[in-house]
Image (cartoon, rainbow, N blue to C red; front, side):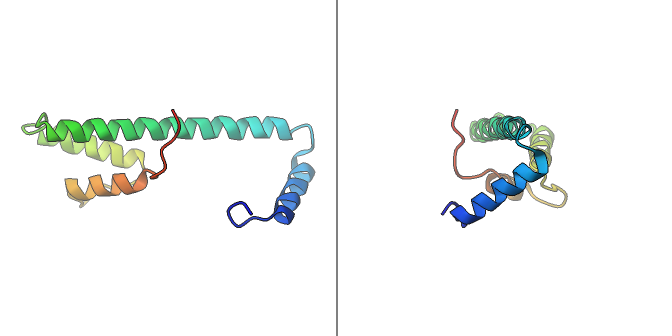
Length: 108
């Protein structure tokens, strides 16, 4: 079983896909899904790296006198992950950003 989907369900899904899209369109559809998946993983890696760099700069004190810039950066990252930053402290935003990025690391 793959994620709660057994072989019978997979066969049914494949049959429905062939009926809906036709056998000629399936390779094109699979390529599109693969490209979308690759773009998602790339964006995920970039967000993880950006968060790590931002946290490192916070620890090094580079943002001590730049509270406004720090807040803007946090809000930008939060909005990119579809998190509403309104009414949340910097620590709350950082925590929500960490939760929004999946634990499993994307392969480089």
